[in-house]
Image (cartoon, rainbow, N blue to C red; front, side):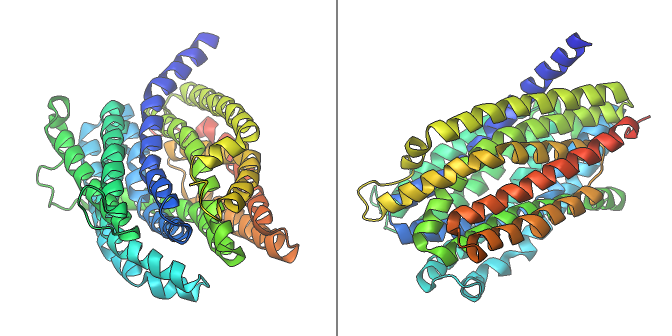
Length: 452
């Protein structure tokens, strides 16, 4: 029994470490914008923080179809059905493309609805400048997500990692050039950050699409051959599994976006400090998300093959790994909050000391929800491996919107705890989600096989 758990642990790490690396690298695309804008201006930093949160909400909603590819491809491989792999992947790309095109008007009108949500006029204006450019990148961002899921489910995680790392470096160089007007470029500020990200997204999609279609061992899937042909059965399968994943992600990201909006009601300094602390916490979350993705792939293959025992062992191994990372993350957040927060600031700025003090306190609070955040994303990954997405969607939505957001509002404003109260509400929502979703998985795991 012990050797089985060890072998599953090694398999999760072999698949999960490159996925973690690609998630961290993907997050660095946003971190580089935050770091650069933190050295450009506090108002600009607050605007990009707010705009990034809004873009991320929409992206998460649309990425459900891409994320559905992980369990769908894994289960198809477990059953030995390569034709189904190709069919599902194509339709996931179709749905991702359609969503990206349909949603752009939301970004074009962002200035109006940000003002309606109570944001300061200058912050709303700058956030609109960012979003009406960055919104053009929703299509390539979603297509890249679909290709990442496709390649990861096929075990091609190394290429996903290296392409994403290269994208970070290009984004940093372009951002440095366009935000500050270096190397002979015009100084574009927040628009420069958006333009740099847009270029990187399209280039990344092009590279990954060429690899997925032409790589020798992947040619047999014929991913883009007769791409224009609709496959109604596969389209329905991806849609049915994907939309609850998107709504679940929307519920969770909406929790954090609501916190950003509430921080804007507190002050610009609070919003800037919140953005820094959230970036750090999100980087830690990428570790658990990568393990969750690996667990989805491996547990999905076990489910497709009808291997109940393997499914349970993979789940226990993945949960154990995620818990161990939680302990390390909590220790770092509690022992080095000042050092970590200072990395994102120009300490010579007049408001830097206020942002540093508040960001340090928020980062210490982030340690409180590490365990809940890790366990809820692991539970969601395992539930997706057994194609269970609708009930988890409702459980997550209640946890985040029925518990987390009201708790943040009450603690932050009714009890006047301010920024710290808003973050305590986040903790409560995540902890509630982790308990309910884990209970759901272990109630269904003994009978949740697809290929049997």
